[in-house]
Image 1 (cartoon, rainbow, N blue to C red):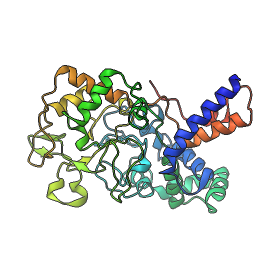
Image 2 (cartoon, rainbow, N blue to C red; image 1 turned 90 degrees about the horizontal axis):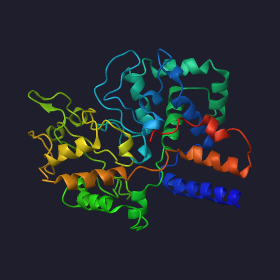
Image 3 (cartoon, one colour; image 1 turned 30 degrees about the vertical axis):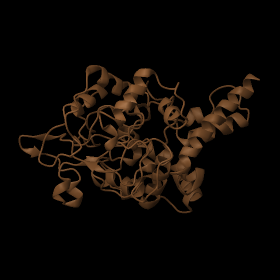
Image 4 (tube, one colour; image 1 turned 30 degrees about the horizontal axis):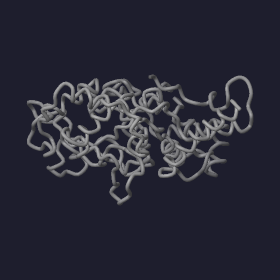
Length: 356
């Protein structure tokens, strides 16, 4: 009976992940995803052999990084915070300034910018020398390792990085009023009311192509100027303006999704705010006034109790664990096969568990 209950629990978790994953599922199947996962964690893609995609997007930190800004493979200091990759498959454009229209395009970025200290052509040549990689590329794509093939595989894996259900999901999607504590429910009321958070962090956003999300993502997929980074000499980082050259986009940055945000400090595009409390205080003060500041920004006059409720609601978005769909699927297969003793295949190949 106990074995049946455990298997049922795994299958229920798999079902939750599966329906979330359907909206962002990649073409290519398990082999392409497995290849992408291997590449994502492989330091051989970098010039020094010490840096991987996972260096700046660590699973235990919600596929983000605890540094304010990343350090490149050659030691250069980055200028923008590494964003979380959780639910990245929903995003219609990538990076804080929206420069890439797809994950496949974005994969080339860390190679061309110097973050990995290695052109992607050299990275492809390096892994081509590995017979196992040649076999894996042949099985997944029917070709030897190439830059485009690497981008397809890593993008396929990143699309499977889907957050699992949180108590906020149970409250908003399933109308389970017992899922949140009174202070967390009050925080949601402030989030959608007095604090006006949902004016940019839409609970169920609509993508630019008109598709409405079937789960709370808390973003509008747009770009806004809150004043972060504005100083006596103006903005040192022009944000979205670097891509559009539209004066209205000066200092505007992408609205991040908020699921599991409690796991991904520091915050904002420059990593300048270290805690959720600091984020709420920044918005409560009306941000940093500047000529292009979003009209949605203004002092909120929240009390200490109201600010604490907002933070409590944001923390309630944290899920029970950070799994990719590939990991869930492997775990279900292991259960079905009746694997006994030792670590399962999923446990042996899974990235580190998230820090709680």
